[in-house]
Length: 347
Image (cartoon, rainbow, N blue to C red; front, side):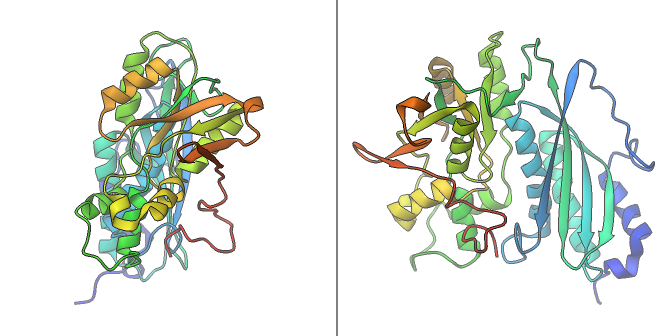
């Protein structure tokens, strides 16, 4: 029996099914009315995923696409120190798409929201020659005079700050390479491969790191700089330094365990710096606080470098490519949305 398609069900029939994944007290009107933000500032972010650019049937089942679509937005909220409240979903699909595919997509969204917070409160559906999933997420952050959920920005780093990552980088890129059958060696799968595939298909927004940071900061109201690393570690460090009018020096790289042995040092470094889609946080903190945060998080959280005065370096970011040898680091090798060619985006 042929699968039921969008063209068979129609818009009204599709919406009736999708309501099952939404907060029924907030959908059904022309717009959703959000309450419960008293004393907190709204934080809004939007992310668009396009078939053939951000996902494909070769690499990502529909449940994982839904999870990733939500996780990408929630990671942006975490990077601002905000907690998730609600999301809206803009869905554009060909009429030939199976209803089962759409329901699995929304199931992934619902599962991610169920773990990290927030509900679907509305959106829009429309026909399109290519599948597009556009998510807008709304979060909330406490006012500046509160010690809870203080806003984290990119431009508030200070010279002397330690640079902290909440986890290893390069795992998602490794998972993507394996899923695309683009693995650089003919060897048997490394034992870490299932973890790397999970890192690509089911990234975890790091609200846990924000909660730990909030606890460790107590009533310290010094601004904290940070952002997520969805476009790559190199991109994040360059943007933080540039936004804050500083330079950065990296003395170690957070390479995933087992990656060097699996693909070689040169490729492991490239994937760590430029692979992208790891959805970890990169934070600039006073050294003592940075050390306490890394110890409290454990795992692959690490101190990787330091922010320095721009006058002390002619390059925005340098990294120790070998003992005693410092090399310039740029954003150019990372994923660029409007580049003529890209080697890091899914095909």
